[in-house]
Image 1 (cartoon, rainbow, N blue to C red):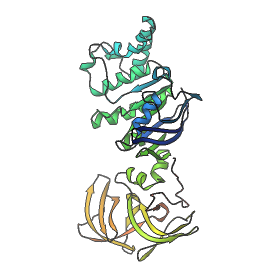
Image 2: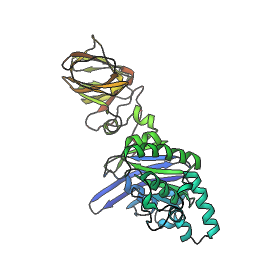
Image 3: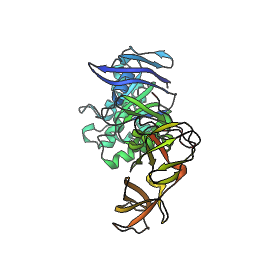
Image 4: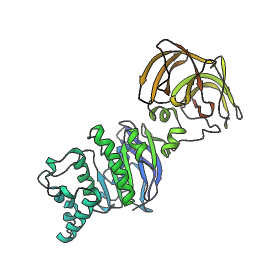
Length: 365
């Protein structure tokens, strides 16, 4: 497999800049997800790494070799698309073996490689079947097989599960991660679905408007988002945001939140007086009679073991994840208790996270 490095990568189309100054490294054998909304630049980045697009600026290195302007065929990288792009007139074995046939391999070696790949994907029983007769999940396995059979340096996947229904998508997430672990492949996986990224990836890059806002493990991204965008994009429901004005300085362990004082992790960097945002995940909110933040229950969504209770407060609507056995009534007056050690603070103007004792992530430009 291969170590991939991207340095100051930028891509412009006339006056529109799709990717702005991306920098990251993907160690050999890593499952790396690029996550973000449609149009954020993640697929353009993937296509530049594959050699299907040429960057406006920057470099792409595979195992230290500069391949920025190498043709796609010279990079030894396999690309798996969202649409399966299988040949309907060929059976499964012929589809999987087609790249080897194009490489002029012997029929014996092609048969051996196809059989090995089919065993890896557990589709040996489908080798003689026409692809048009297969389910969506099996077609995706065939598309993966066609990539794997080449034994490339890296796998690039552009929303490969996007055409599947929810049940197949969940199944294929497990299958893809298991496959990655078995072949120890360097994989770049593009998706707009946070569940796919969080469940499969070793490392996630969050993109927004052409920029990488944060790179980290799924837990780092969730627990310590580097910006308001990341905090809002990750989580279901997302983090709650409450805006206020207060002065902060290094060493502070509480904030003046409107008419009350709220404990927060110790501030590690000074901030002048200005608009700030207090962030708190729904699971870090509880109900308490003596809590300083008050509101009235707007609604409740039952989720089995938990429920999402929304509360209207003077500072905005707040969602709390609570045990399902807790009885609440619409319009009921409640107090909201925040877990102080899990609170986050953001600069309301720049959107950047303010470093605290338990909240030290920073964005990767």
